[in-house]
Image 1: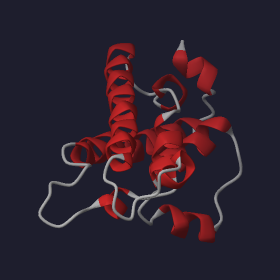
Image 2: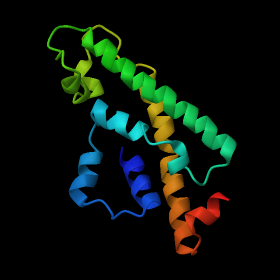
Image 3: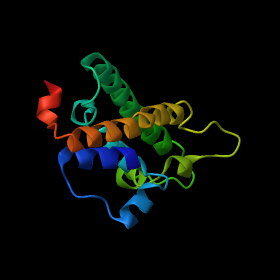
Length: 142
């Protein structure tokens, strides 16, 4: 969440996040926040990547978005102490739906999310270096 938020702001030329916003983004995100972050196309964020690599990341982003949506579908079927309204489910966190002696709903998804997020600091660094060098994003893409 933090990497996506920072990269989205840097690439979009929006103001920096406040300290409180950064602190909040360091907490476990809600499923709705994950959905929102994964809804940003890679072409809008990963401008340093070669087109083929960006396309691979885009496929992974779409798969992760479907996986997060799948967690919501599975959570809705848990029953006990799980809200039935979609808005309440999206406000939940991955760990909110853990049940003793069962596999977590996010099994297999969490590591993929971390791999996806791992590329963001490099993209932020690259973009900031290009900006300081006076290169404009539209010049870099071509």
